[in-house]
Every structure is written in C-alpha cells, then in structure tokens.
Amino acid sequence: MPRLLTFLDALSNLSEEEMEKLIRNFEVVVRVATKVDDRTRYLLENVVDALRQAKTEEVKFFGIIRTLQDKDVRKSLGFLLNFAKIFGKVIDE
Image (cartoon, rainbow, N blue to C red; front, side, top):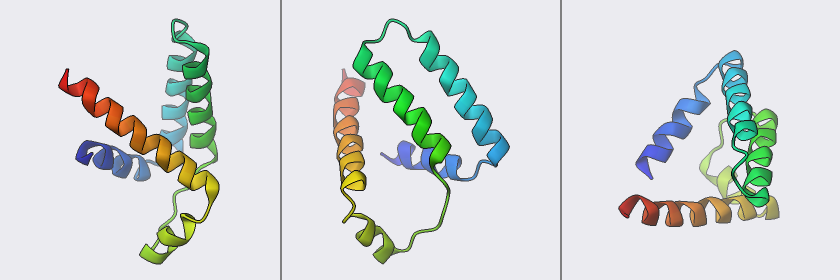
C-alpha cells in the first residue's frame, strides 16, 4: 500500500503534458494487450477514460468524508480495496 500511495502522489505531481503522455502510453499497452479477456480490456479502457477526466484538486478531511456519500466513489474504492487484497496475495506467491 505504501508503494501505491507513492505512485499516486507521483501522479498528482505530473504536468498536464506528462499526464497526457502517460495516458497515451497506457492506451498503447491496452491496445497491445490482446490476450486479456473482454472484462479486463473493458476495465482498462475505463481506467484510461477516468484518467482523462480526473482533475487534481486538494481535498480536506471532511471533504473526503462527504465524497463517501457518492455511490460511484464507494464503488471505485471498493474495487481498489478488493484489487489491493488480491494483488497482495499474488505478490506473496
């Protein structure tokens, strides 16, 4: 989890130009990954769309609590936590 937080912090410090380059590179990876199943490809394409739309903004503690009222935020956090749990098991193998 600390590595994920470090990665997310690094992402938040990228310029718009650097972020656009990262997104383009990620799109190439998604296109090349033809051996993945349809669900994985669908999820990766949605990650690219979310990266394009997301804006960096400072959120204070109570702002975080307020965003937890949003169903989409809870759904994505649930996905990320489940991913982290499964990924942690894979790392230990």
